Amino acid sequence: MNKSFIIFHLDDGKELRGGQRQALYLAEELNNSRHRNIMVCRKNSPLEKASVKKKLEIINLPYFFEWDILSALILKRKIKKILTAENQPKPAILHSHTSHTAALSYLVSLFFKVIRIVHRRVDFTIKKRLSARLKYSTAHKIIALSKAIKKILISGGVDENKISIIPSAANINNTPWNENNFKEYKENSKQKISEKFAIAKEAFWIGSLIALVPHKDPVNFLKAAKIVLAKFPETHFILAGKGELSGKIHNLARELNIQNNFHIIGYQTDSYQILSSLDLFVLPSRQEGLGSVLLEAMNAKLPIVATNAGGITDIIEDKQNGLIAEKENSQELAKAQIKLIENENLRKALAEEGYKRRINFSSEKMAEATFKIYEETIKNT
Image 1 (tube, rainbow, N blue to C red):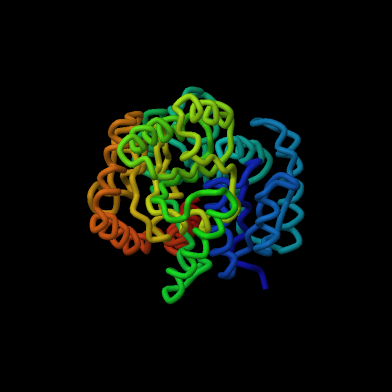
Image 2: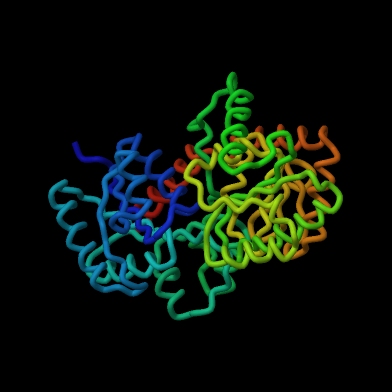
């Protein structure tokens, strides 16, 4: 029996970051229904390996560069072969999860009719108007993660009527713990991280899981840590991630003389083990499409401090399920952390409210909203 829709999820990422995880959540949820989902990714990429584990179909493309006609021709041929074999009367849905793959889906659409859905996950200003017009304005529908991203798209010349906001999601039921053993899991995780990275187990742990790139602003996190340590010298900070700023962060930790309390542990595949070991989570970004890691932190029952960058405030409401600090302001970021170190009741209240609100960002709800866009787009095309 033919499945209702055949959806090709395009992602050229070389790492497994938030955007790739969101694509996996969506494909996995839709795969549980009667729709065929195919991940179109790089060969031997972390996304391919994760897709194999989730038993998703895979197509590999070289993704040489943004306007890669060779990859477009390969994909066009494979799509036609699949549609012919399935005797599929409906057009294929090309769901681009990155900006570069939006260009690729446009190239494929020059050869035959497809439905083009484009995801915009970052709040970067659109500078190349012609490129943006081809990638976004020609798409049937654009999904923005937040109000901030929608505003940037409109300012870049994209028709507001084409844009829908669907926030990122957390797979809230797919955790290594349940309600009964969370405390035990948390204690075990802290023990393992303590032993692995030689971090004092009884200390107060503040952490962040971010790529070490400029828009995530790990320097802001480091400078704020220096201020916090001046008041609470027994605190320990954990920064999990990798990126172009790795060397700079290591050097700055030594310059600030906080290297003994600031642990840069690299990219970690088990994000929940890190999160559950923390006492407080911090997102120090200067630009942020939404901040899907915040959803995982909420799911791990953590109090949160985050900046007001991009779409973060679509998730975190100041003094309700977290504290918000001005972006690129290490003094404010440190002040919010100090406030929570000093106030255990406030930490618990914010964590509990965040845990309640995580349900609003479930992968199931995200998939339902996305599927409605598929249906409406095909109906109106």
